[in-house]
Image 1: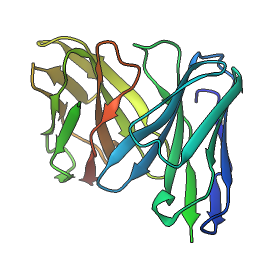
Image 2: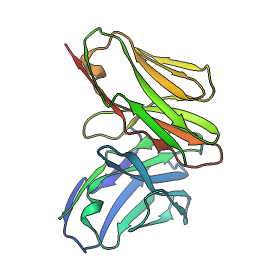
Image 3: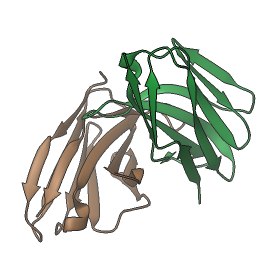
Length: 112
Length: 110
C-alpha cells in the first residue's frame, strides 16, 4: 500500500460542531486530494492541493476548508458540520498531474 | 462539465461467465481515462490508464479498451476474487482532477 494514513477512520459528531480530518503521506507526492463518496454519486472532489500552501476548490467545496502546511499533511475541516456531510471521505495522492492516484482507506463520518 | 456514466450499476456473474462493463464519457479534451477497483471498506486501487482511442490494456482477467465516447472493461472467465466495485474516471486536458462515475458493482458466484 502507498504510504497514506487517514485519521480518524470513523467519527460520529453532532450538527454544528467543527470536524477536522487528517491525511498523512510518506511518499513525498506533490498532489493531494480530498474526495467524498456517496451512494449513487461516486467520488466527488472537495478540494485539492498542488503544493505546500497551494490549494484549490473542487466541485463540492461548500462547507469545507483545507490546509497544507507541510508536504506530508493535508487537513480537511468542516467548520460547522451538517447532516448532508455524512459521507465516506477519501484522501488521494499523486506524483504528477497525469499520474495515477493512490487512495487512503477512508474516513466514515456520521453527522447526527 | 465532464460527465461519466457507468453501466450497469450492478452485475452478478457465475464463475467463468465473461462479461463487460461500460463507461460512457463526455469531456472537452481527454487527457486520460482511468479504471479503479474498490473493495468494500477500502479506497480505490488503480488498474489502468488509457490515453487514446483504440488503446487496450490487460491485467490478468481484465482488459480495458477505449473509443472516443466510451470505454469497456472486459472480465474474462471471472473468479470470486474479482468481486468488487469498478470505477471509471476521466481527466480533461489542463485539469488537475479526475471526474468519477458512480461505479459498477460486480459479484462473482462460485
